[in-house]
Image (cartoon, rainbow, N blue to C red):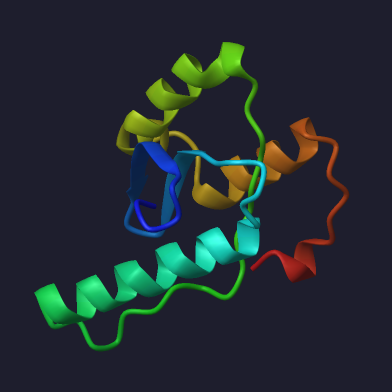
Length: 110
């Protein structure tokens, strides 16, 4: 994020996904930001941990957050381990899509 002049406000996740709360500029293109994050973190994992088979999935999901919800989203991200004792990633993601009014076909999600 430093190279892109953005701000990573909170990062958290579990063994099968990660959540990022990012502060981006109006000039940022989301696909470029995610490409930079994925490629940089993949290189770091390969170099630092010697995990040669690590790779990110091809896609991603992105949602905007209003300023009034930032604290709640930070808390949610920081408590991923606790949250996923109750709901799976797939249940969580479907809920995000439904609450955001995003139409989807299940066959394209996974």
